[in-house]
Length: 217
Image 1 (spheres, rainbow, N blue to C red):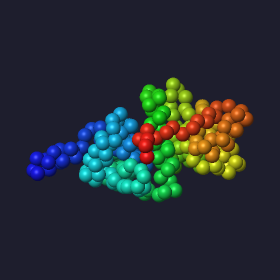
Image 2: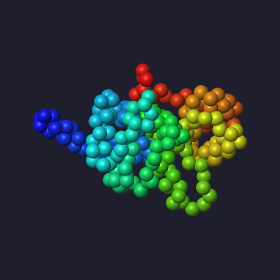
Image 3: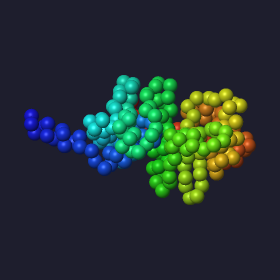
Image 4: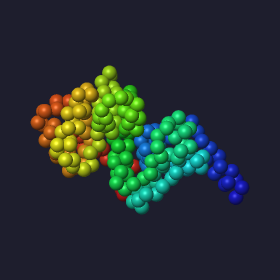
């Protein structure tokens, strides 16, 4: 019994990789353990252990939001402080949970395809926008920096009001070299129509990448 307890405590010691993962989670609001497995190039069990170590250190909470999904890992105030970030605490809500999960899937997909790229998270972009004077502008879900170009990344799970969507595109096309939408089936049809209209030549539309950690669920 003592040998098991010693092993458990050793397993819960933080590692340098854990803090790197924590910083990624903070940028994305939260992440499921399958996201952590994909991020580290390991398996679900490793993702669970990373979440357990962060929880044991008080840097994150583990939350089972939906029975059908893997556990979510959500940074605490201490976790944000350790990463040097002054973001507000994020509380899981069903209305935003799906979007956060899809955004994580998109970021992981892009980082796998383009590991040399740099990613600016929505949280970082929002914080920078607050520090800038002038009219508030639309903040994309992320910005991809690659080969000297900036691409606004958007994740669309629901169909937006057409005039609102067009206003967002008009705004983004002025500020970024490209616009890339990852969409669920409903908004995908609408966005493809806008892409084919060629009114926004830098607009690209893709289907959402399948979450690699949810096969078989």
